[in-house]
Image (cartoon, rainbow, N blue to C red; front, side, top):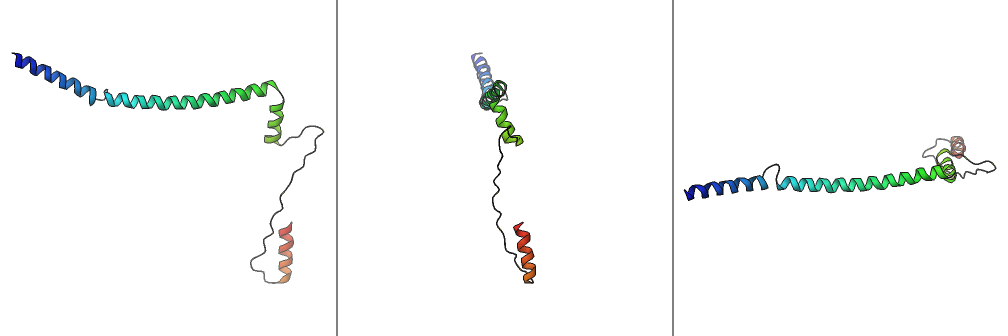
Length: 115
């Protein structure tokens, strides 16, 4: 009788150990869930920083005209009344034509490139 009870207890112990270590609800699943929680925490922290930045930007836009003027200048190319706008355009490098048949064509190509 004690051998039978001991056998049942060993069987139950093995069954419970199997469920803990190898089943879908065991240690592996707990480890996977811990990793998922860590990844989600990182994502949430990043999104919180982004939301804080956007909230600060909204507060800045609501409180003063400086941010609105800055956006109008940079994004829309607007200027304020009484200001002068100067745009500096870099000089384009004039490339010599590779093969030109006659000197007259070379002059026309040079003039076209300079425009």
